[in-house]
Image (cartoon, rainbow, N blue to C red; front, side, top):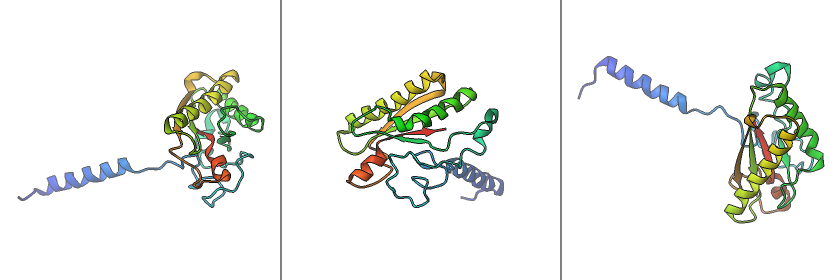
Length: 179
């Protein structure tokens, strides 16, 4: 079977269009756009789970220019074992995200709830959702419109750190702000 030259060109162009549409330009699962899992360039945990020092400066440049403010750099907060209670050290992080969203009514965020691997799949999905909803409630109290916030739970399915020790577990018990 012989294909006419214009049909062959059309088939090649369609193939290239499909491939271009399937390419990914997103960041990592914790909201970073710099290609590292925890923002320190190494791709492995450094035990900073309690500090909230996660970088995400790659997205703050263009998307953060709405209304003259920037998306906060810290985009991950961490939780204690089997808890959805927001820890006091992360309240300022949440307040800065709430301020950004309040100042930029056209911006929206997906709160991604995560857990460590302990517990059943179903329990962890529910716990991840409770954590993300706790953050959503906090944001709502700060004046953020509920229409700007979406909640999703990944449970234990997308760990930030691999391993069966407390350091890895601590890095996996989190909510990530994905703008």
